[in-house]
Amino acid sequence: MINKEVKTQSRNYTIPLITITLLFFMWGFITCMNDILIPYLKQLFKLTFFESMLVQFCFFGAYFIGSLIYFLISISKGDPINKAGYKKGIMFGIFLAAFGCVLFYPAATFSYYPLFLGALFILGLGFTVLQITANAYVSLLGSEESASSRLNMTQAFNAFGTTIAPVLGGHLIFEFFSAPDGSFSAVATRIPYLIFAGILLLVALLISRVKLPSFQTQEEEIVKGWGALEFSHLKFGVFAMFCYVGGEVAVGSFIISFLEQPQIMGFNEIISKNYLSLYWGGAMIGRFLGAISLNQSLSQSKKAIYMLGAAAAVFLVIFSIVDLSFAQISFFIVFIILNFIAFFVGKSAPARTLSIFAAINVVLLISAMVNHSELAMYSILGIGIFNSIMFSNIYTLAISGLGKYTSQGSSLVVMAILGGAIVPIFQGYLADQFGVQHSFIIPVFCYLVILIFGAYCTKYLGHVESTEAKSGH
Image 1: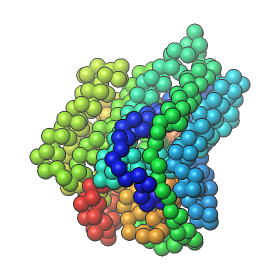
Image 2: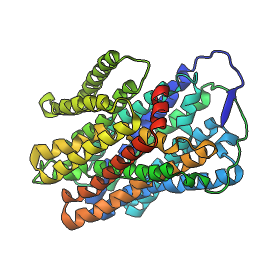
Image 3: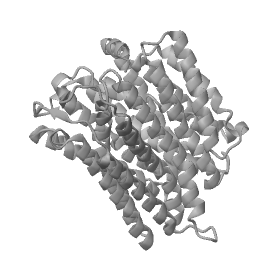
Image 4: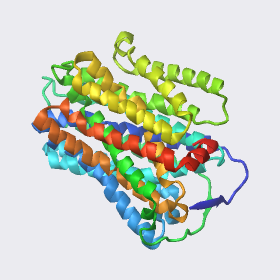
């Protein structure tokens, strides 16, 4: 852990922060490209839904493998990033992710599905390193008091990347680089992913040239064994994180296929990708609202004004990105209002707000399963805005009160991102057996687990909520 800066004088970290924020944007953008690849590769290789979900299995499975390796090294030899430095860790993560993007070229050239999966696994390993290093590094680029606001800002730009990826990435693969006759060809992925690799390397170059602060590190205590698992709320939190990432990824992975169903909308991929942006754009809106709602320095009236302004501004940004008319996305205003109300009912308490959001998503998923046409479509797209605060709230509640086991517990929670690999696989199997619409019963159970975890923490960790609310997290 980093304990204090060598240089304590005031410094301007604006340029380094902008550079790291660009990295967060690209990170979100490329991650969301998986939702474009799934229907594309499914048609290209004539895959079942189960087989096409191997995209997420390999990508998010890399998070588990990478985090497990990091965890085992940490408990035996100490934190590797603490020894090597955050900047070197970030650079290594970028190079590994860029290498994964480059591997799409031979995979597309030979049109071989296992090569695509291998490239996605390497890409996922690179993002695992960034997951471990970049969030912590942002907190160092300025005062401790403003660390939370910087993290919220960079996460919002990560969500911005996931919002425009379906539109821009979908255009590149489904239209711009597609075969002249409109047929599916693996080569359509070659140039886009080379472009992504080039941009990542450019970000790495910028980071290498930017003068970053010097920090003094002190070896932390190496905590051996599995003492963190003695805390029941951590074990429950790891399971809740598994379910959250699994549910969010599974829903996003199936949206294009869901909207293609004749009883839903019968859209093709070119149209569906714009609606997929609304799903991920909802998460961006929710994160901005959450950052304001959980800021205890603001009065209720100021919170309401700021949240309303932020929601309107981000909604206009999304409207300018997607190739849809105002009438086609106006339904989203209803979800913004519902999200607004849910925050105030939650009273800025992380666990209570988590339960409310999970309950709403359960209702929306059931609606998507039993209804048809626009009502089913609106229900599935509204889930994104209520996913917004789940990662941060689950993470915070899970590691609260762990003391010397905090680092170990944090590693276990990050490992739970494995849910993004496992849950879509199960939903893919159900989709093959019973149809896409009925397969959403899998994420229903995921959000029920999150609802129960929030209720558990509300009852047994009330002191944690009080502490988090006062600190503004």
